[in-house]
Length: 117
Image (cartoon, rainbow, N blue to C red; front, side):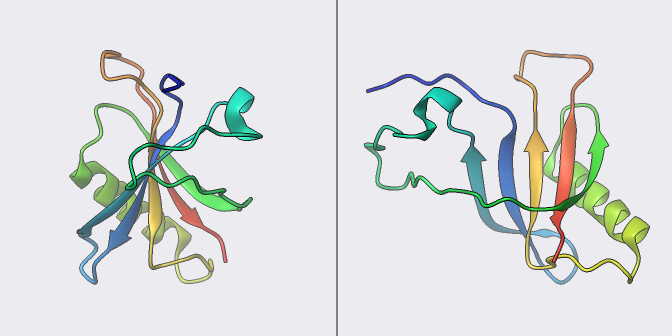
């Protein structure tokens, strides 16, 4: 019953298949605004869970435009290529992040994050 508004980024956890495509399982995460973090309201929908994301170090790449699944997959492949074989990061998932509301046509910001091991 509490409205919190939209927060940024909207973060999707992507689970890549062997060929780099995304599996159908995707987890969407929204940041709880600061004033609610100490005592967040309980979700009324059982499919919504409150999780605390621990601090992490990431490798990141940024791109513009209205991001589609293929954009995230392509930029994840570019980031993987740029990191080469020396960087240690989680291979079983990565984060796809969007920072802008749908009605913002220009100057959009999207990111792909790999979590450093």
